[in-house]
Image 1 (tube, rainbow, N blue to C red):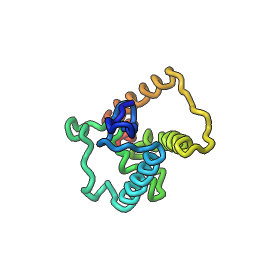
Image 2: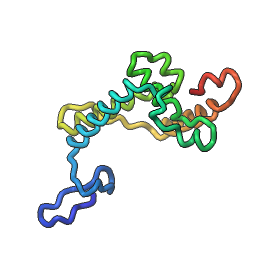
Image 3: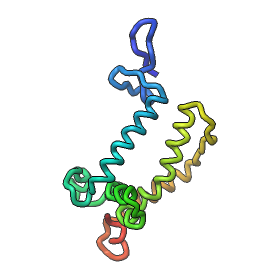
Image 4: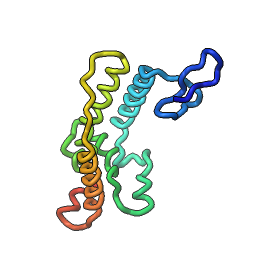
Length: 157
């Protein structure tokens, strides 16, 4: 990890592997709290401002350049619908994003428990074959959601 050159009181200045953040040292707890605060504020905005018709959010850069849907297209709309209590409609915008949320939440929760030195479940290590399978599934989803024929049109956001 990179060290700040502040003499004998040098502190670590990285968020991830060798990624300095404006010369400010953040502990794991501070990073966790900052992420929670940003998540709450972002969630509140997303809960109140509908991305389907607000014009507030930018379009997907990939869609803007190519006219094709990327694997992430529809995620913002799906999150808005989830926050407003409509999981079935959310699945219609991006099923991959909706189905991945429990895994993302588990990962964040275990990291937060470790950051605050609380008992946390053992880390889950996924075999390489599963990761390659997930990549294949995402690429297949990406390709099929751009096929303009039934039943694949259901995958488009």
